[in-house]
Length: 195
Image 1: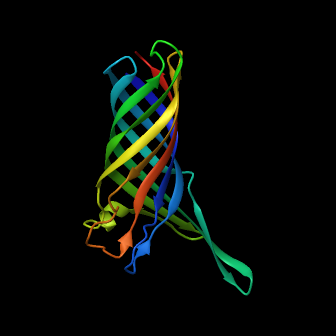
Image 2: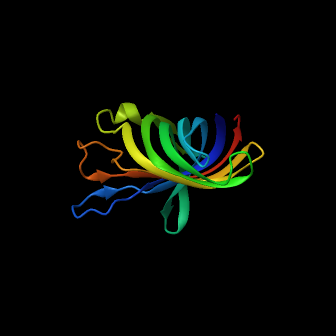
C-alpha cells in the first residue's frame, strides 16, 4: 500500500478534425493525492490499483488587457479549477528485487470522473465566480476512459516516478459537436511505501 502526494501538469489538447470545430488547449498546474495497492504476481511483476484525487488549475491565471491607441485601459484576470477522481489500474514490471533498490515501468487503463469545474473572472470593478457544471449542465462529459504509463525508482520505502495519462473521450458531450477537448496529464510523484 502506498500514499502518493505529487504535483501534476494537466493539458487539454486540441484534436485534429476535418469538420469546423472549436478546439481548446490549456496548461495548468495541479496536485494529486493517491492511495494505491500493489498485488505481487511474481518476483518482478505486480498488478496495482489506486484511487486518486486530482485538483488542477493551481496558480493558473490568464491576464487579458483592453488596449486603446497603445494604452492599457483595463485588465482582467481569469482562472479555473477542476477536480477529478481517477481510478488507474497498472501492470508494473520491477527491474530487480522488490526488497532492494530498483527501477520500474508500469502501464494500464484508467477511469476518470470529473467532479467540479469552477472559473473566476476579475477585473478592476467585478469578480465573477462561475460553477461551470451548473452553467453547462448537459454539455459536459463527466466520465472518461484513458491509459497511463509511468517509470521510476523505488528505494528505502520511497518511490520517485514520472508518468503520463491520456483520456480518450471528449470533455464535452455530443450536444456540443463543434467543441473538442481532450485531457492529458504529465505527473511527477513521490510516494511512501507501506509494504
